[in-house]
Amino acid sequence: MKTVGIIGGGQLGMMLAEEIHNEGGRAICLDPNPKCPASYVCDDIVVSEYSDIEGLKKLGDMSDVLTYEFENVPSEQLKYLLDTYNIPQGIQPLFDSQNRIREKMNANNNGLKTPKFMAINSLDDLYKGIKEIGFPCVYKTTTMGYDGHGQVMLKSDEDISMVFPYLKGEGILEEFIKFDFETSVIMVRSKDQIISFPMGVNKHKHGILDLCIVDKQTEIFNKIQDAAKKFMENCGYLGILCVEIFVKGDDFYFNEMAPRPHNSGHYTIEGCNTNQYRELARFLLGKRLEEPKLLGPTVMKNILGFDYENMKKLNDSSDVHIHDYNKKDIREKRKMAHITFTNTTEAMYKEKYENLFAREE
Ligand code: AMP
Image (cartoon, rainbow, N blue to C red; front, side):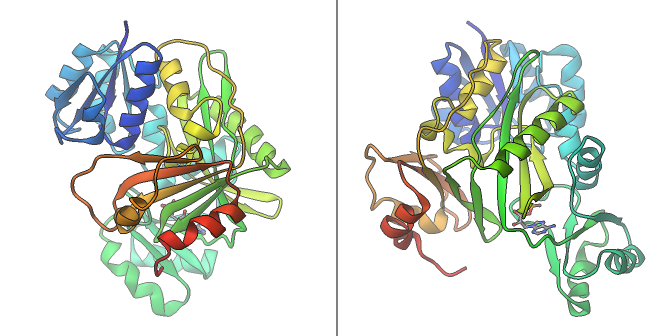
């Protein structure tokens, strides 16, 4: 029986561990928190900081295969592990995704268009960038940004001073895309197969994914899937990759990518014949991949701390699937759980459930 070591023990690691078990493997996670979500499912846990090489080596020694479930694992440490342990996904996609400038240059070089962007290292750069790109535009820190952290929206000269506190570090200025909607494509690639999951519309609140609405697969989704698969192949990436996209008319723009399971793919657990965690588990265990298909209209709602009490008013039923991550510390914007509503269109979700989670933006 093969053992998969997962660096990180959050909810993504928890759902991956469940599928590793279903596929006949063992799962161990590494996390600083002994009561992390994956600890309740894994066969063992190494309690360690992600940057602690001794902890990472311990995980490596206990595992046949290593993977990661979040992006900010220091790549220097992983580079060291790569020589000694089996990391089938390698570290290139992680390295490429860890810096927004590197990430966007890599997308452009491998066939995916991005919003216009410029590197910002000084006030002078910022003024030049605004002149080149124009308002509205978005300033982001190049590293450690997620869920809208470290971002400033610039609509006019008056907003420029909001960027000043960030100018000590490296940043990126991006053209603001007035998109019609956001979407994401999740792919798994092995040496001789590449699969991609059905796509939907991603809606954010407070810069955090709130809803994924997955229904009919339209022409634009097919176009994005084709381009994203070519991108993954051109880059030579293996394993799982999520690419986040802005769609505007017939055009689409790469926003960012994550070489791990993604919360926009939670819906696949009940919404598809196979799911992102299972296919990653199959890749890690060296099994053949299965082509995903949508079973029916599906809506996934992320449950943040705000929503957690209201979630308890719902009961699991054949079309309401509640996934509680068992986090003890409830914070307003912390991802606490998610619910997948199967056989549910957007209109049905609005009619039956939206009110339960209504709150001010
Ligand atoms: P990010 O952390 O880059 O995924 O940004 C968080 C959210 O901010 C995205 O999901 C979009 O809703 C919005 N956003 C970020 N960058 C842009 C952009 N260049 N144009 C329009 N919206 C953006």
